[in-house]
Image (cartoon, rainbow, N blue to C red; front, side, top):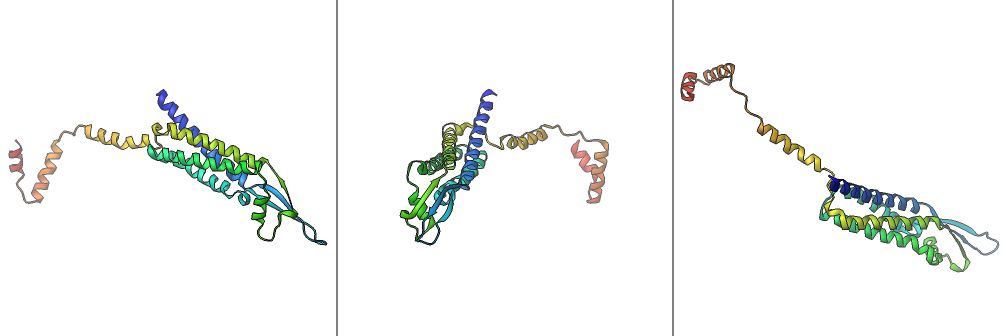
Length: 211
């Protein structure tokens, strides 16, 4: 029982970690990562644009949706299927972590220019990064990688979601088969005789044969 209980806790941890990573990724992807100010020729004032994670790093939101679906799949599959889902979660977590790390360690001007579209020049561009949201995406990626590795290494032996329900019909069928047949009463024999008369048979002959 201790082993089964430990396996259930591991499964719960993997599902919770995967779902948490997906929720954090979607939350981070929907926030403003960069505020960009584009200078324009005089006398036009500069323009300001707020770019979210879904614009600068589209894979963040995509990975979040995939991780939420994978959290449900971890409960539905078993064996090799669960191992494959765990591998997918690890890969999605790696992509998510890199998407969050890249704005923190590289120049985001190129990504901003690409997001703003043609006509935007890096020379007149000023960007202000909000590091909290890329960092949140990075944390979500790390959590997903850990949940995926746990599933890959330990997931094959975890119990399935519907295991207890699969045994119930078999047990019920066994109980029905094991139940002894009710002994026949005089009323049952009389009823058989009336049915034989309805069919045009002689009930005394069948009674003789039975004896």
